[in-house]
Image (cartoon, rainbow, N blue to C red; front, side, top):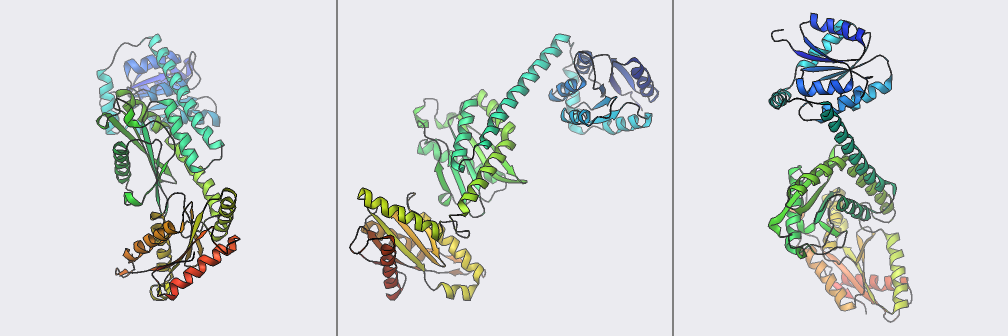
Length: 490
């Protein structure tokens, strides 16, 4: 070869050094030798060889530690490293790979095997060559103390990272609902660095959920939401209308505007995608004070825990899904008939005990069979899903929506008198009437709903069955009146 490539051979066995050195020099390489781990690291930093051949078992510090030290340092991370061992132990190969070695060869190799591997690794990508040249410009004398300090710093950092990962992994050991898991995650971040607020945009098949960890001021909250949606778009997400993304506050705390340094212009945002099964399932965004410490610490920790965090959230979602499947309708993702009956019974008993009131709305999609016959059952399913979303948009967080059966829905309105319940039903009717349902032909399809409303306490109601029958009778009257209307039974 034209210019002699410079290799560093690190081994404490004189015979191995003599034989291997001769093979390399005969092949045209310039060879330097190191006899222990400390010397190997010193010469790697000071000489910056084109490639290093490193024995696993070295005096002072082992080859594994030297390899990890060099691969973790930006000035030497580009350097190809071949690990040598006198044993064919799987554990040696495992640790060699984990510390970043580029190749692994057992002593007793044929010369051609080593030379071929060197030739293969000497073809450095452009970015590695650039890093190599920059490293040469920073070349300096390296002492034993310098190497020991570097190893100590590396061990401290690895211990810190391991502690963080173990602490984060502990969340997966406690089965809790998704919202509580997110709350715990945000709290963990608060233990590691200072930040003001955070958000997690989570994607499901039919819906997107935005979890916010502090009740920040409206101005800052909306800015955080904008940053989150913008970040999600950057990861090729099709972000829904912010008005129909469900929002949840998972932690309570002081308002961000109460902090004197928390003006909007003083905020910095960091974000990472969380990936499950090679797909982005969520985007995490944190807002903190615009300081070098936040801009340095937050991204480093987020990148460190991203895989662990994705697994924790994925497991929490699966656990919640398993619980939810027993109580929700698979198509519309609202409560199913059986669970609604349980909730209605609880509300009925609570009303009797505390002398409170509640209202019930029974709702039916008009001419739904005709829609299925005309446009097909797939379109009918889409209507049911869109209807559920429309209904949710007209309800409070405390209201309970369920698919009662087929095209019929039921709505339980706690602490709601008859007049307010009727207004809610009318609001739903108008929202559905104004909505365009898109058929496969592209033409908008208009759909309407009929509703029956009643409340409790009221005359003639002594059980859950009585109030259901009364609301159903009101629904029947709405259909008899021509549909697309609300009828009330007092």
